Amino acid sequence: MNDQSATAAAPLRTAVIGVGYLGSFHAQKYAAIPDVQLVGVADSDPARAREVADSLDVSSHGDHRELIGQVDAVSVAVPTQFHHAVARDFLAAGVHVLIEKPITVTIEEADELISLAHSRGVVFQVGHLERFNPVLMAIDGILSEPLFVESVRIAPFKPRGTDVNVVLDLMIHDIEIIQHIVRSGVRRVDAIGAPVFTSEEDIANARILFDNGCVANVTASRISLKSERKMRIFQRDAYITLDFQNRKVLVARKGSGELFPGIPNVRVDERELGQADPLLREIESFIAAIRNGTPPEVSGLDGRMALSTALTINNSLGRRHS
Image: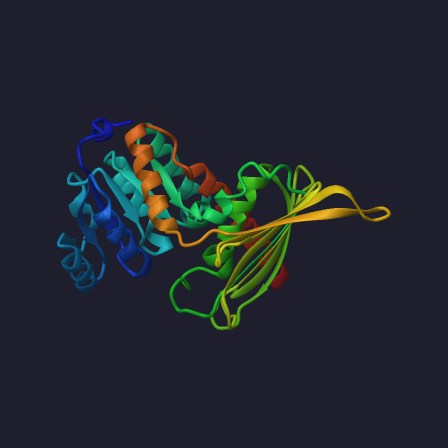
């Protein structure tokens, strides 16, 4: 860990690069955390940078490089195609980086950032927000060895995020979660999708076969009339439903005794987890990793693995279109 994070009592100087819809929330969180100083924000739209900066009483910048030397840590929330260039500037300067998903456009870019973070001894965390959803955290100790996973993530159409297709925009959330819980390499992918409102796929389905035999069926759409973020996990003697949107968990287990001859009792436990702030938890986790010198909850390697599978899915989509 570099010298900037050596003194836990010193305020951590932070900034947010890219203060569109999501980046503005990052800035608000940093500004509200004790012992953290939001120094400034940067955006390629100077008027937008000033608007957010004025609301939080910090400096505004049109060029992110103006903040180098003034900050210990940054969130990078610029469009995906600029992730690599912006994050590289800060990592090379020894600044800790929390980068929004997907980590980069290409695996080569991701590898360069991961290597750079390692050589500079700084924290490099990827913003896979659902890892901090209390629904996922609630199944610690319940989840054992998934045999089959089914996920559905659908949302109404919004122009925001259409710089990438639905796989890199929405599906990658579930890809990262599934790879985190399955903990096995990907053996084969088959996918189908269609562009509807944009030139990229707006709806897609992928079947992922893992080396350990687990199968995941993953669907994502950004052209639905409603929002839904659900995952169903099947393992020996248990069935788990995760509702990320409504923060509900249902666990159905095989109980003792029989309901009918040859048919076991099923014990159902359903919990509603109440309000939560996953983005605040994500940023607090980033700060804790910096101050404690510990690996981030979602590392650059985790982000790379999710990107690799997403790109494999996109290749499968491309083969179908050719």
